[in-house]
Image 1 (tube, rainbow, N blue to C red):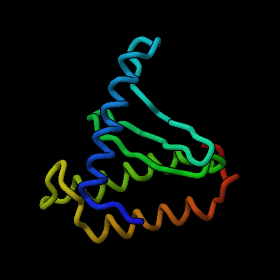
Image 2 (image 1 turned 135 degrees about the vertical axis):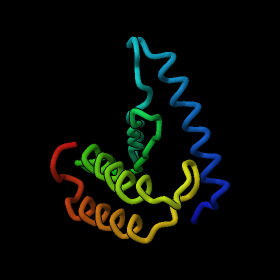
Image 3 (image 1 turned 90 degrees about the vertical axis):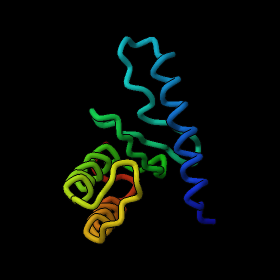
Image 4 (image 1 turned 60 degrees about the vertical axis):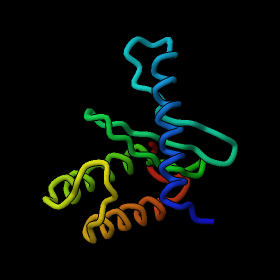
Length: 119
């Protein structure tokens, strides 16, 4: 079933808290937090930008190329959301060009299949 906007916000908030805890508990000095969370049925990949924006992708555990997909999503976000004078930070992105380019990037990643280029 589809999640409501409130449910998505609640889950994102929970992940943000886990991300912060992970970066504080890490034995690595200056850890950036959780980059990947792996289960038997999926992997959650997280890419945090230098400004602190996090992009997350849920994928099949065998799916390759997720790091490249996350970088592409950030590029699309930079080009079509941040450069849009009507976009406000931390608000839903309402831009048809963003949606079209994101859909295209996801289709390319999906066509690469679970054993595509290494991530």
